[in-house]
Length: 140
Image (cartoon, rainbow, N blue to C red; front, top):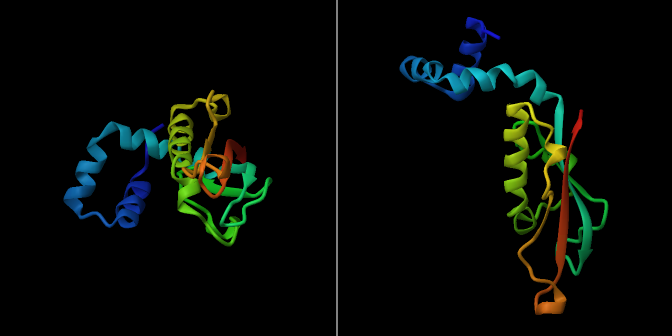
């Protein structure tokens, strides 16, 4: 799929690129490939769902969800009021992997290791609590 001039100009403005930077951006074939996937990614949500929570200082409960768009942006208006960076720390690698799989045309729901947890070791091991997140991708 070729990209029309209008989309290149939109991206240049969106990214704040000078004309020279935009020219270099266009010369990288991966950028054109990624832009052709834009519509597909816009229709996806990457979801991290709490499947275990005990002693969580942020108060997360099983069933709470964190939503990211297909490009990996956290959609804060759809998330719990508090967003604990510690719980998302290792989960962000899964969000990145899901995003890359979407770009490659591979179903991220086929990922083998789709769970992560906050780095707190849990009460049983001398910490405060533990949260486990499960990742899946769904249509908007």
